[in-house]
Length: 272
Ligand SMILES: [Zn+2]
Image (cartoon, rainbow, N blue to C red; front, side, top):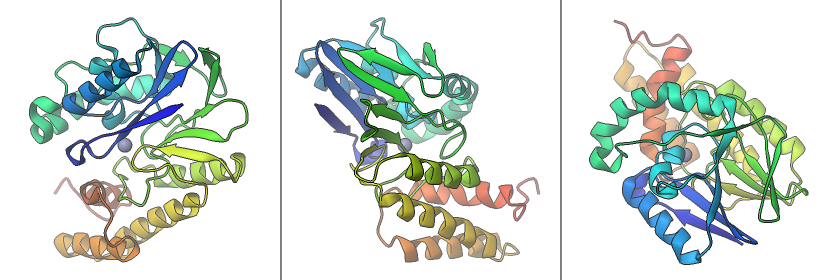
């Protein structure tokens, strides 16, 4: 039994999942805000089974920020590939600088980090269920790690590889790697798999093509804008991507991504 816990719009509509197994619950991700992660903890307690582990799908704060409230002081394995650990601990001070003014006390004062490492293809077992990690490396975030539930590769906790027709965060600049990861996942997962994604969903593998076209449309929009007038260039990128996705949620994530991608492509000099 998979329970999807969707955050408020203020919490970026991010999902965490509670997977009920024989003698406990395995959580996948933890949401961002104090309120959303406390609600997640209450939902776990409502199930009435112990928390056996938390699995992380990637290194972004809307997926690890709620860990402190979710584990609530218990000794629980928090599992991710080494690369996810490294990025979370490396970038957390910078995330504090960015997220504190945006979220105030809703960004947890004390963050909890992963405490158990897995390598690509490794399987962990809890309460009779098996979870196998796919260590993708950089993509949507600096380090991504979807999980497969069971051996048939049909139940997938995909993280933010696909957004369910919402605007996307590309500010980390790994769009080429992200596109390659999408092609790999599309090849390796069955056509009838159920994709439990980080925002919205669940979705089916037809959304791999939608996601790739979103990324290409955004990057083309940045590349083809006239950066001699940065404000007009930004507006043209927004207009172009809204031509592709007229009324998706999370538009602020896309807007936050324009300058970093333009800088990455050498079109915008932010040092001037
Ligand atoms: Zn996310």
